[in-house]
Image (cartoon, rainbow, N blue to C red; front, top):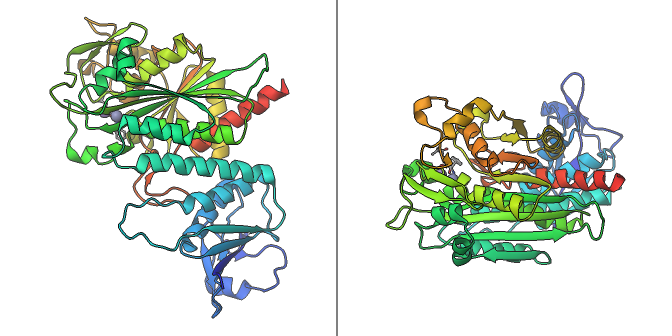
Length: 473
Ligand code: BES
Ligand code: MN
Ligand code: ZN
């Protein structure tokens, strides 16, 4: 007989104690009281029983999407090695947003990645929802969760395997049904992608620019072309400006931005959104070697601007600048959003759970803030301080790749964003610095230790809304 966990839904009463909604067949009031259950989101009370079927009561707090996402993740972890999990929603059916969040919590909380010789055999493989349901909410939850898991897999793969070419092939596998083109090192060199080439030249594993397109807009005449750009550094040693070992430990995840935008395209295609989206993933391995770029070198970015590379560890902006310039000059993007684990200063400012949002356009910033709220992937808007722009002036090139330290202006995340802005050609542009939330140090609600897939839910929510708003016009 399969082991099944059942969800009942206590909510927080005015007195801070858990109670069950509706009139459940069994009354667990005494049990909840005895356990001093509060009904807080993710709190789990097991009903004592000798039956092989476990019965769990899970707190859903005030029933907000965030609470339900937590509850789903807690339940998934409790049911980790159960054969199946059934969730009884008959007495407490959440609304569409709540249902989506609950299912995201269930699916993302049960994600795992292992390279153990003998992985645990039992894993949760079936989830049943009992009660009336909402297909659109389920589709959104399932598509974004599958895509998020794909992004996590890409991030969690060790860099021994994960070369730029591996990432390009993985993108092709992930994005079957989309148009995927890859520029190799020869093409990058001949076409003038000096940033990607410069960063990648220290590695024996050459760089790639991955371009993937989904066009669900068909023949609509007023179609917005969205270009998503991702930082795809498959390992960041810092290059000749070498990082200490402790700072390198998470650097297989320095392609988290690329993983997020590639996986978002998977979700967008699965949901058949009526929009046109191109993804650019700028992939390179930042290594020190006899062929590596040196501090003081001057490279030429795509489009012709020159950059004095004063710190080879500020490599993300160099690969992104090429891709953003390409989005501007060749793709003529209507809107550009880049996602990058760009600066160590970002989690210093906002911590591990919140991404920094920089935007040249207030309407775009507001759309992304709304998507963050709806998806439960938090971000905070940061300023593009014009007075810091002087820190990027170089006496010998058009730009320097780090702010001039002598000016003592600090604000490393801001100068990095200002650097990127130079390549946007004045197009509406937003930059998400996910150096904090791209990786998690431990399991935490729907997030699992390692790659989080941060950005997939956020961007999919944004694009879903964009498609809806276009449809109304
Ligand atoms: N990939 C790092 C940023 C990073 C740090 C991401 C920690 C995630 C966690 C980036 O390439 C980098 O090295 N940035 C430098 C920039 C500096 C040299 C101006 C940094 O933040 O120290
Ligand atoms: Mn770096
Ligand atoms: Zn980096």
